[in-house]
Amino acid sequence: MKIVTSGQIVMPEKEHAGAREMYDFIATWEKCSIVLSNKLLWSRFGILSILGDYVLSHVKGGDILEIGVGESSILLTRLAEKFGKKVYHCDISIGEVTNCLSVSGIFDENGMVCCMPSDQFFKEIGTPSIALGFIDGDHLYDQVKKDFDNLFPLMLDNGFIFLHDGYPPTEEYINEWRCGTVYQLRQELEERKDVDVFTFPFGAMGVGLTMVRKLPKDLPYYREKFRHLS
Image (tube, rainbow, N blue to C red):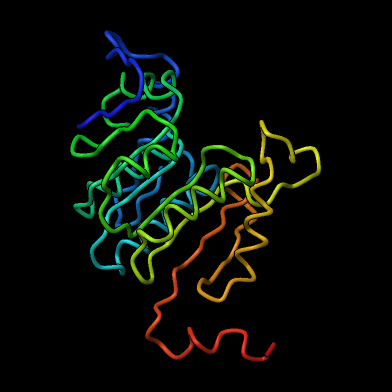
């Protein structure tokens, strides 16, 4: 595992109790081809693991990238192992990264863990083409849009970006510490001609998981999308 940081990070000498509890709760897999925790099932990020398995089964080439580490890192690590992909993890919080580093299995042994702002990550880290991206870092529109705009050019045709927090269940969730204003980006993406967008309002902690497919430019339906509006 390669660790890249813009600050000082000290490798933990002992496991972080919360990180161990998170790993034990999630990392019990069904004995089937679908990557799914038998404890979480459809709650929390179970839907991400199922859809991620689908994407990587069909999109040839490309790696995995996530902005924001935690529970999703365990699932994406398992997907990387299953499909022989490299996975890039980026988070601005030294504490979050250190806690996850303390438990073996949260990060992929062949992956890259980057503790830095996502803007710096995209500027300095040379990532290859990406088949599966997951954005769950800053929850404010301006930064989430930057993350999406930085990631989108790296995506393979038919690659998928997943956005968390794009479907707040009530107005109380529209604050920086919950869903924030991610939904505004989701609404914009729904009007674009170069992507297909669908949001699952259930699961993913009940705040929505939006999947965004990068449409291939050489197919007729890409050019004809929204033709009824012209």
